[in-house]
Length: 358
Image (cartoon, rainbow, N blue to C red; front, top):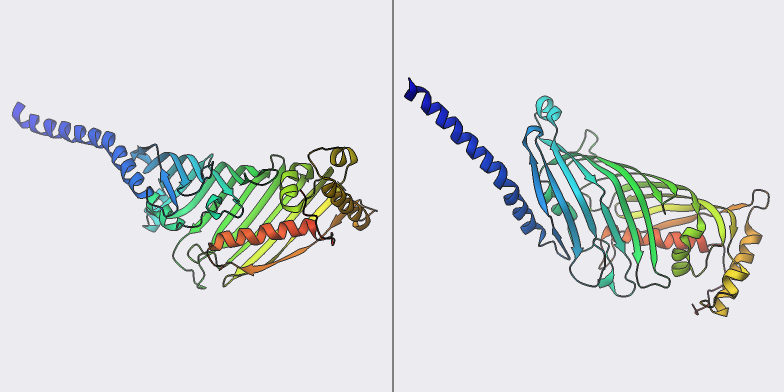
C-alpha cells in the first residue's frame, strides 16, 4: 500500500518543485529575452529592469522600461514607463476563442525634443519601427491600451529661453488595435484622452487611425480650455519672439489625413491679452531694445484687432501638408505641421517682420 501511494506523491511533489522553479526562473529568462530584443531598435535602445508573472490571471508585468536615443546628446529618455501590465482577456478567450490582451501603462512619460539645426539632438521617434517594437514587448493581439497618469513633454534645451511644454495627468485609451478589417473594409483604431496642459488647462483629444497605415490616414481633434498664456512664454519667446504679460485662451485643433495629405486648422480664442509691458519688457536687461520695440508693436496690433466688446479675439490658421517628407517620419512631419501652424496662429495678426536681435 505504501509503495502504491508513494509514487503519485513523489510525482506530485516533483511537478510542484518544477513549477516553483519555473516560476522563479522564467521572469529572468523573459527579462533577458526582451532586453536582447530592445537593445537593437535602430536609432533607439531600450531596457527593462525586471518582469513579474501572474499566472492566475494570465498576466505579466514589465517594470522599469526606458528607451533612449543612441546618437546625439538628448538628456531625457524618449520613453520612461515604470510599470506595464499585460493581461489576457478571459471573456474573449472563452466566448470568441481569440487570444487578445489589455495593456495598462502606469505613470509613463514621453519626451519629444527639438534639437534645432542639429537633428541628432532631436527626439521624435524617427528611426525606429514602433509597431515592431511593441510587438516584441507584447507579442499578442491588443484589444485595448490604457495610459494612467502619464506625462507628455515637448522640450528644446538649446533655444533661448529653453522650452518645456507638457501635458500631465494624461489618462487615455486606445481601442481596436487590430490587423483585421471590418465589413466596410476599414481598420480604424480609436484614441480618447484627457490631460492637464501646462499643469492647469483641461485638455481633451480624440483620434481615429489605421494602425497599419504608417500615419497616412487619420482624424484628430484636440481642445484645450482656460490656458494661462503667461505659462506659454518660453514657447512664445523661443518660436514667436514675443511674451504674454496677461490673458487666457482656448485652442481647438482639427486635422485629417487621407493618403498622407493633411488638412485642418488651428483656432485659438484669446481673452484679456496683454503682450507688451513696460516694466517687464523695456526695463528687463536681458532683452534688447529691438526686441522690446517689436513686442510693443505686437501689443499695439493686438489691441486694435481684438473684439473690444468682449475683450477677446480669435484667429484661424489652416493646416496643410504631406506626412511624407524627406528624411523624417510621417509622425514627425505631422508634428512639424502642428508646430508651424501653432506658431503661425499666434503670429497671424502681426504683419510686420520680426527683428533679428534676441
